[in-house]
Image 1 (cartoon, rainbow, N blue to C red):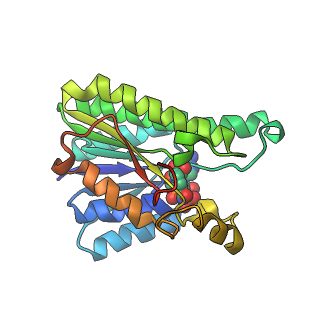
Image 2: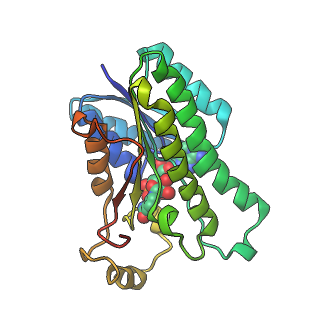
Image 3: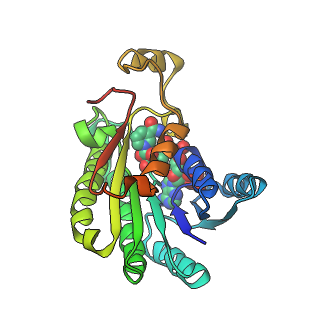
Length: 243
Ligand code: NAP
């Protein structure tokens, strides 16, 4: 059976990806940090659909915990076919108001965690000369978001990392891509008021905010053989907000 790790799969985009990938026949490792019950609910939903999943707690800002998780998956299931490096946190703050600790936490979770997870998965994938790596960046990684400069830096870093790693791993049968979501209706945007959302919709050509399923649909396509000639790309799923 194919195995997929989805980091940050207890809620939001990761949850939708985990459920869709289970429908595609993957045994899904539903990674989480704090939301243990929600992660278990994702596992239950997948079981109810006839799929297979386990939840696994590991902090994506901690390289030791990442390695423990990937080692466990290799030992238990024999390998890793797909990783969706999705776990991430946001921060809305003027740069000059941002503390050292906030900067470190954002970079450690969003960028270093993504790089480390991909390194550990790539190491396992290389032994079988096949695999699929999909990272979740952001439209702000493409164009920069005001009051989200550090977040934007982490997501821009993921884009550069995707392009470089795709070149490094392409001849080994491993494709590496990232998705740059636009505004998606998840908890990460709980700071937005309904009025904020209406104002933002005016800047989205398709006239709506995205949902987690929009991103999961792109992940399903990217991991499939229909995308076998696609690597090193940034797939923008943003309703046309950033072109
Ligand atoms: P969300 O609903 O807040 O979910 C975040 C997920 O990440 C949760 O499952 C959370 O797990 C997990 N997580 C956070 N820190 C973690 C850590 N250190 N270790 C392990 N898991 C961790 O956010 P989302 O919107 O689905 O975001 C998912 C990804 O999409 C993020 O990388 C985000 O930057 C990106 N993105 C989102 C949007 C958007 O508008 N929503 C736009 C562009 C990009 P626990 O709850 O278990 O702690």
